[in-house]
Length: 200
Image (tube, rainbow, N blue to C red; front, side, top):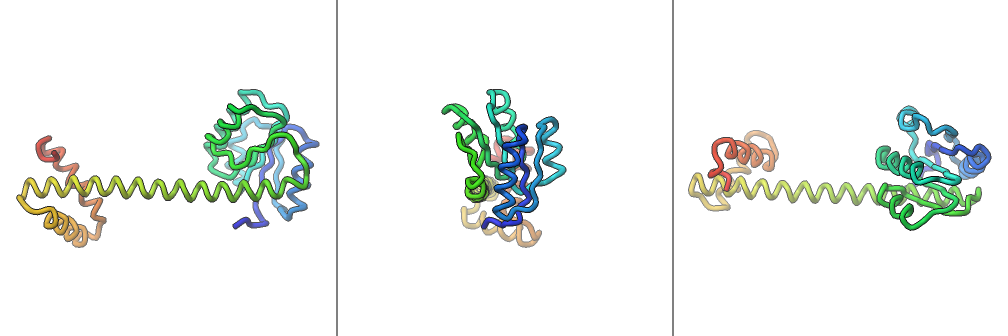
């Protein structure tokens, strides 16, 4: 959901263009707007301001400037709408790879600012949700692998079935008030220390 009271940071070296963006944002109900004209030390300024969303307007960006802005967008983990006067396919792909939520080429008009900003926030939220779900799935898969290895160690060392090995892991986890994956990881680590034959 897009809140109307977002804190917006506008980065634009061109004061006239920055005022167009600022006017569009204020007209759309965004009262917390900060404008920066100098990109020197921009990462520190972003940390100080803590904006909800960042709007970057680059009139004639060269390759180095674009790369710097793309690095910035990877680091800040916030929705970023980037306006450029012209672009090429490589820059567009680099913007997507860097996580820029909206990359708008040619055409900065006041009435376009709000819908583009709304779209940037929505895309960023959707992307963040997908990244979080992917990380959770990876973590779960990793936990399963560790549990399977721990079960294998128990089956081999104690001569028990897979089901009995899992039951033992689960019971130990409950007794220690820990996750099964944590117990399994401890067992795998210990087996690794005791000898390579134990964790095969």
